[in-house]
Each structure stands twice: as C-alpha cells, then as structure tokens.
Image (tube, rainbow, N blue to C red; front, side, top):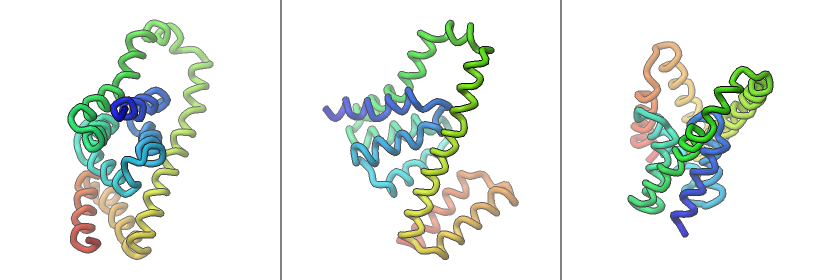
Length: 176
C-alpha cells in the first residue's frame, strides 16, 4: 500500500504541476507534508534546499530522496517513475495534438492564466518556509540570513548553491 501512496503522491503533482519542477514543488509539499505526513515542513525545506543545491531537475531529486526515506530503494524508484510518467505519457499520446494546436489563442490564454497561479503557489510556500524559520530561529537570524543571501546572490553574484551551503553551515554552527 505504501508504494501506491508514493506513486500517487508524485504522479498527481506531475499531472497538474504545469510548468515543470518548480511549479510542482507546492503540490509535492501538499502531498508529503499535509496529506501523508511523511515529512515535517522543516524536513521538506531541507530536502528542497538539498535538491536545489544539486544539479538536475528538482522534482526528480526530491522524489528520489523522499521515496527512499519512505519506502527504501523500491520507494525511490516508484517515486521517480511517478514523477516522470506524466510527461512521458503526455509526450507519447499528446505530442501530435499539441503540435497542431500550439498557436491556438485558447492554448495561449490558458498558459497566461496558469502562470499567475503558479507564482502565487510558489509565494505561499516561500512564506510558509519564512514563517516557520522565523518562529524557530527568531527575527534577527531570519533577517540576517535573508539580507546576506540577497546581497550574496544579487550584488556579488554568488551561485545559489553556495548560499544554501553557507546557510546550512551557519545553521549547523549557530542554530544546532
């Protein structure tokens, strides 16, 4: 039964997560944190940070990690397959249809309507991470890490993976 739940937890976000990995992150979070309670929000945030620090698609890295934690090696395989299966099926069955209608005004309007929804969902998950961190670590630590991250990435053009690694080190030293 656990493997079926793992499959559904990653297949459903893969189907409705229009826009790729980043748009499916809030959907995955809803499944693994809110619905199945496999991870806490903090654990999900750590998995997301680790996934962002590694190269490659974020959704598959998160699926592999979470699937492994929940169901071992087979759980990891099931989660990975469930993550890529919607795209694979869409490519096989809908490629011809999509190619014929790619310039349709309806398709273009649909895409324009979906983008703000994805932006709001990513904003909500960002707020949830910020709020939980603020509650656990305090306002000054939160402000310090937010400002330091902003300066490092925007002013000094430090790669986000290094900023995440630095934040993890800061947390291990000062917040453990």
